[in-house]
View 1 (spheres, rainbow, N blue to C red):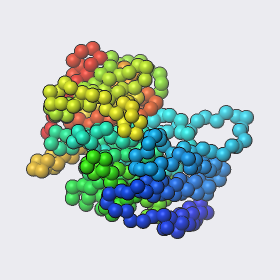
View 2 (cartoon, rainbow, N blue to C red):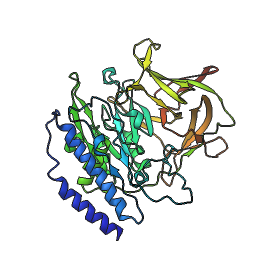
View 3 (cartoon, rainbow, N blue to C red):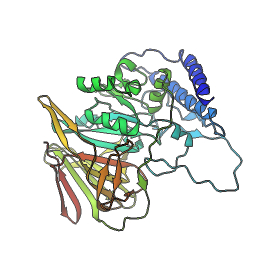
View 4 (cartoon, rainbow, N blue to C red):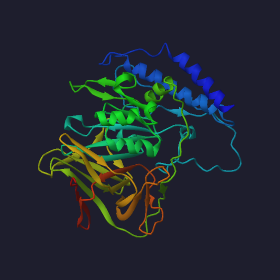
Length: 416
């Protein structure tokens, strides 16, 4: 009965969306964001309708006043995410435990979010004029990894919140294939090496991989503030596009991470982590006790010393996360010319977790039966992260990892 209901709703919405979706030129015009917003509303409608097929589901209502401004691609006052409200319902006399986001340990404002896939989006870190990026502070988990030429790139996972703009978006890498499988995720990316494209085309997630071509705008739009021609997206527009392609929202198992505000009983001081992927590419995480977060500082010169606050262009605030995990993972050359790296995120390995100004030696583990990346203590017990977002630094097993001063950790990545 539920499957029939979902199928009927999906068909209805696809018919309704035909007039809203048009092919957009490569460079967006003034009304591009309006089209993205219409598809964003469609995505919400799909979620509402699916929720309506389940018994006793409460259907959210979209606050239309929170959609993107029609004056341009970047709103004059930057919104956080589209505001979702729920109708008033009669409260039970028995207190209900909040529904928690399995990727952050934080309460979900809308529990219907559990009935959708995460979205993995490939975000650029170089060249430097791509900074500041849009939307990284709305991601639940961000993986940072070596790409090539001494440069690193981000794979940002969005689940508990939507982001009205994410970018600049770049091409995918082999590591993304692993992350898509672990989180049963949608993948939004610019393009990829032919080997990555072939692997995606032959995978069971090919239908939920969204690239600039053939998707075009929306959901993958070009924005050209100062002749940089950035590729950006909107997470709700991605969901709407997949709904149009016949990909319904589904519930996936994301359990496996553990969270607790209580400080770990063992560990070292961990106030700062500095990671060098190459001489011209380093960054620092510095713990801010007032914010209860590690704030990001990114290199701005070639001397391995100059750094500035890395901001999120959506919030105009410095990027900060509750947890930073240094995951030590085997890297392997697929080819050296051109440089092409495989990051073997399989089995288990050493890691160092930073939370609340403390550093703890832990283990990362990828379950053989599938599922999300998990973290354990040296005794094999689940490691508790601080509730909130997590940034995972992937470095090779040959990386140098030192505590140079009490509380100050230093890492230099080395290739195979």
